[in-house]
Structure formats: C-alpha cells, structure tokens
Image 1: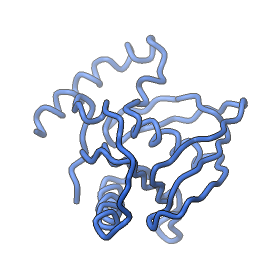
Image 2 (image 1 turned 90 degrees about the vertical axis):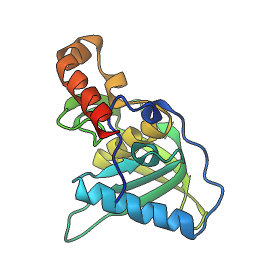
Image 3 (image 1 turned 60 degrees about the horizontal axis):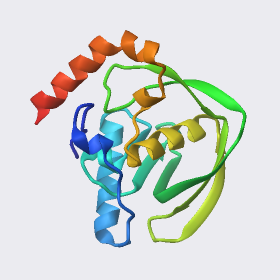
Image 4 (image 1 turned 45 degrees about the vertical axis):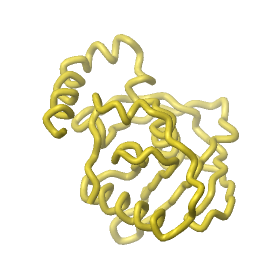
Length: 170
C-alpha cells in the first residue's frame, strides 16, 4: 500500500508528467493505487497524491458488489458543458474536509488505457465530478482552490490541522 500525501506536502502542488512507458511497472503502480484508494475508502486517486508525479488516475464509482473501475493515463478534458453541477466533495489528501464545489456537469475525456491505447468518452454525474477532481490533482490544483475565499476561511482551522498532520507523517 502507498502512503497518501496530505495538504501541505509540496508534491500536491506539482504538475505530473506524461506516462511514456506502458509496462509491468505501470501496472504495479495502478494496482497499488487501487489498493490504497480502497483501504482509505476513496472513489478516486491521482498518482501525485501518493508521491508519484505521473499522469495516472484510478477511479471506482461502483459498489463493492459491482465495481466500476476506470484507469485514466495521460487524461485530457477536451470538452466541458456550460451547464454546472454542485457536489459535496471530499479528498483523501484532506481527511475530514467536505465542501460543495461547482463544476461542469458533463465532460469529454481523452486518455490512454493501461496498455497505451487511446480512448475518448463522455462523463456526467459522479463520474464527471471525480474525473475533474483527480484531473485537477495531476495539474497541481486542489479542490480548496475551487472554494470561495469565504469558504476557505471557514475551513482555515481544519486546513491548519491537516498541514500539521502532513508534517507529522514525514
């Protein structure tokens, strides 16, 4: 299992690099990321959240009985709807912090699969939200950056606690 990096860790603000090798090492990283996500009760995880600066995202918006796993390598959001949706988001890098974030309701994603094949698909609902959240991560953007200054101020104490936790985990 990999170690989740918490708010305050500089790796979370770095832009991830494109994956160029589609090999057994990549498969192992994806497997370890999925295991880490499940153990931490997450539904999405970007590689830089576990200290790997590669454009890798794992998602499972299904259930334990019927998983719906998506592996996105080198993803790009190529289209966004003008229609917005609001969803209460959480983040494994921000334990205990939840906030409503507004994002495009529908997106079109272009990415590669674990073998390097190019794929493109549309997403809406929870899948769209999770992809956008994790896509932000690989670009060094955190969900608190989407909050209004007032909402960030409201969460200031919690953010300080998470930063402290991040330092303790090093």
